[in-house]
Image 1 (spheres, rainbow, N blue to C red):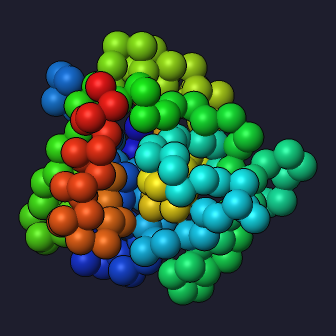
Image 2: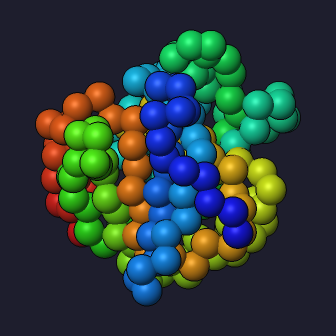
Image 3: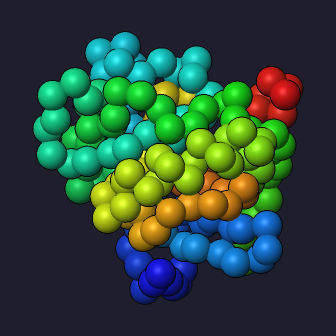
Length: 174
């Protein structure tokens, strides 16, 4: 399992999707964080969908949902038709700031969600996984190995207030 450093060397477009295991092991996946991929009905994503993890590719794939990455250089991304995890798999959510002061949404998955993530990530090894918040693709990351973790931290949020709002919405559902 390789680690990619979260450092200023990466462009603003390259953020990280941080996954932490309960035992303290952390896997950092390089991802593209955007301020707003289109998630409107024309792309098949609903803004009422609070959170999903989906397989992702930049190659047009029949049956997959097309979304647009708005941050330069932009581009299209195609999302798997079925979510690997969704808001119902989130047991707890909180907002934090990373060392650079950026907003981070920390999600703790339920035992069922954690159990669903392992086979989904095994199936996606060597490919990509996208985090979708309110119909926007916020992170796209390469899956380096099976994920048996129960905690995930997502970057790419517009503000700390947005992270707090999303954490409250996700926590109310549970």
